[in-house]
Structure formats: C-alpha cells, structure tokens
Amino acid sequence: MSLPNAPAASAVNSCVSCKQGKRKCNRVRPTCSTCTRVGRPCHYEEDSYTFPQSAGSYHSQSLHSRSDDGAPSQVPFAQGLSPNTFFSAPASAMNIDPFRHEALRQPTVNIAVSNEVSKILGTIDEIHAIATNYFDTIWQRMPIISKVRFFERLPTIFSNPQADYLVVCLAMNLILQYPTPGDQSMQSSSYVVVKSFISLLESTNFLSLDVVQARLLITFYELGHGIQVGASISIAGATRSARLLGLNKKNFQELKDSYQARVVAEEEKRVWWATVNLDRFICLCNGDSLFITEDPQSSDSLPIEDSQWAQDIVPDTTYHTLSTPSDITVGHFARECQISHLIGRVLRHVFEPASDPEFHAQEAMQLEKTLMAFMPLLIEEHSKFGLYCAALGMCSSALFMLYDSALFSSQTSSEYKDTLIESIQCSSTQITEFSRHLFGDVAAVDFDVVSPLIPLSLYQAAIVQYRVGKQTGEIRNRNGFESLKEILGYFDRRWLIGGRYLEALQGLKVDFPVTTLPLSGSYVSPAGPGG
Image (tube, rainbow, N blue to C red; front, side):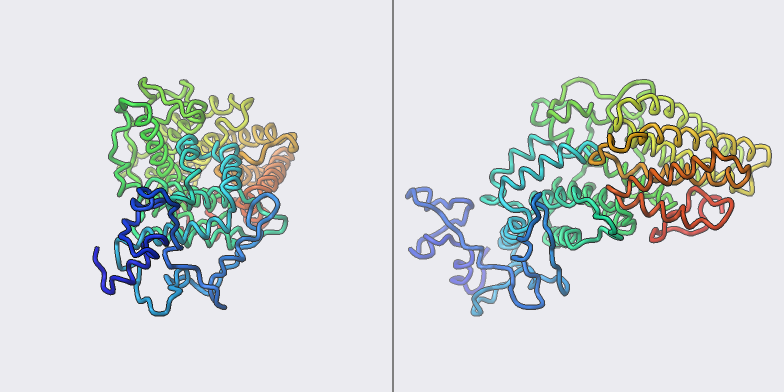
C-alpha cells in the first residue's frame, strides 16, 4: 500500500540497517530479505510507536512491578483509553495514523501489545511458568486450549509477536489471580487492562481462535467473581467471534486425515462447546432464555476424554455424541456439555412455556426424569473429586429452576405442589450431604481446581434448607443451611461469587424465598420464574 509522504512511511517500517544504508527493505519480521541475504542481524525499532510517558497517560513501565510469584503487584490504569493512550509518534514531524492503514494497523498493535505484555508478565521463562500453572490448575475446569500448540508458539512470543496470542497469556495470568482477604471485587486494574486489550483487538480486526479463547477465559473469571454484567457481555463477544470463524457450522464428526488437523478440530470443537456451556449457565444465573448460541443437535460430537486431550492425544475413532446415554462414562467437559444442553431445555420450558398446559406438564416431567437420571451417576463419582462436580452443580441448579418454576406457578395444582416440595427437598438434601463429604476436610481441598459453576447450586440448596427449616423447625435443616453457608465461605477463598451468595443468604428476610432469584447486578426481572 502506498502512503503519502513515502520517506516517513519507510522510516516507520524499514529495519534499522536498511534505513541507514538506504536500501530497499521488505519489512518482514523477524528478519527482512536483505539482511537475510547479506547475513547480518536485522533489528527493528518499535515501529516508531512507543507508549506515552506523560502524566495522565497509561504508564506502562509501572506495570513492570511484579510480586514474587510473577503476578503483577499493581497495574495502574488512568484516565481512559484511546489510540493515543497506547501509541504515540516520537517524531513530531511524523503525521501517520497507523490505524488508518491496513498494512500498519495489526503490526503496530502486535508490537505495542508485545511491549506491554513483556512489562506485565516478564520474560519468556516467566510466561512459561504462568502457562504451566494455568494448565496444571484452572485448565482442568476449562480445557479449551491445546497444550502442545500453545507451547510450540511460546518461544517466538516476542521475536514474532501476535497480539491475540499475547492476550491469551494475559487472560491466563488473570484467571490465576486469587482474591486477598477483604477483597470486595476482582474488577482490578489487571482485569481492566486485559479487557482493554480485548477491545483493542476487536477494533483492529483481529479475529482468531486465540481471541475467542481469551474472551472465554475472561468470561469464566467474571462468572467466578460475580461480575455478572461483564460475563454476559463477554460471552456475547466470544460467541459472535466464534460464529464469524464459522465454528458453529463445522462438522466436528468428520475425522481429519492428519494428526495436526484432528488436534485443531478438537480445539475448535471445545471452544464452541465452551461458548454454549457458558451461555446456558449465564442465562441460568440471569433467569432468562436469551441464548446467543443455537441449540446443539443430538448428533453433535462431544469433546474427547480430557485425559487424552491433556496429552494432545486425539484418536481417529468415532466420538461420543450429545445423545450418548447418561450411564456411559465420558470426560468431565463432555458431561458438562450434556448438562448444559439440558439447562437450555429447562430455561426454554420455564421462560418460553408451551401454550398447551398438558404438553407443558408432560415436558416438565420428562425434563425432570432426564436430569434425575444423571444425578446418581454424578454423585457416585464423588471419590474422584473434581471429575463431575461442576456437572453435578449445573444439573442440580437446573432441577431447582424446574421445580421452583412450577412451585410458584398459579397453574400448578395443590396436590402436585406437595410432590414438588418433596422432590426439591430431596435434591437439596443430596447436595448438602455431598458437599459435606467433599469439604469435610477443608485442608485437603485443592482450591486451585474448584469450578466457579458450583456455588449457585449450593446457594439454591441452602435456600431450600432454609425454607424447610422455617416451616418445620427441624434442626437438621437448620444445620444443613449453616453447613452450606460455611462451604460458600470456603469457596470465597478462590471465587468471590461464593461470598456474594453467602451475603445473600445472610440477608434473607422472607420465610419462603425463591431459589432462582439472581444476585444484584444481573439483568433479570426480580419476579423470577413463574411470576
């Protein structure tokens, strides 16, 4: 692309050696063709764009302050974002806006983001340590990134920077952050910085699997720390990006010829399923059926066994599908996919009810039967803590939603309400006893791998224990209520959403609260389902 003021454009993009020798430079990174031919080192200036150091701007060098574990100790963030906040031309005579020129736009962003990430996260070795920690912990709850493919790209993270991959690294570092005692919010400076880079990628036409993965990690972080509005917006952006990549239209059942192609296909499949799962769960929290993703089909293939994926082993055999029976063992992520599909069906049943009351009632019974078929299997796996715990929490939450929607409906008969009360009490007792078993020895719980999708079910089970205790005065229900509050307090050590639910339970003022009323800050009518 030819630009006005050609000498200035050449100065922006040519390598130092070619510019000084007034030779033609093809501006290929990391080494241009001229330097390659003559065998000399090839060095580029920072594309003639550096971060401003003036007062009132974003002071990037202060991001270099890190704690002993490699995490940023503080990431100051100042008075708003604009292209000038991130980029400024050092030469006053230069009058080029890189964002207006396609040839300059993304390379400029790549270098700028690379500079900032190196100051936030440190060296390649430090980023490798962050990524290893991520794959050893929270990746087990959100296994959407190929380990092999990620680490293959890491050595060139700064020599051949790609802004979308760099932002994935930032998102990994963010999601590893723990609350400190007394924290009321995890909308920290680090969080705002990562979100701002997502906006930068969006506004400069970066569209890739990395972008979707970064958005999903941020969504997971927001769900875990009760940033509900942010999670709702983030999942929308992730889903739209995934759609633009065509992930919703790919036939993942087709077995690819090469191993590398199968790995890429599996990674794409996991990313798409993650958007579906989080979309459904966010709607469950919000109390609506405003899905961004379409409903999966029964023939859609599920993710492979997670232990295989952890080693980047992708078999060339037929995969399990969404319709795989509940008594067939699948990986925990695949099980979550099955449960999230049922959550979607429950939400449509509750918020988009059929006009025929008889059909609506039959649909409710079928959904209950299907969900209940999963419960014994998921509870049976309690000896493998972490395997199906998130799926169990999601399944229980869907049941509580289904029960309460009928219980608070004026169209439900008194006789059926008695049956519903017994069923919901049974589900609450199961969750209470299961949770007591898991957290009987808190010191043995690995909070690094606990899922933020569990606390909602604990909150709902506690509501039921509270209601029954108020009605019957039974001490066992009061004890169950107190036990679940204590466990939510444990969750608060890792995910602030546990503390949010705990505060809601401590502030109960009515004798028969609903289990489906979202927390403050969610986009939902306070009437809840069945209102």
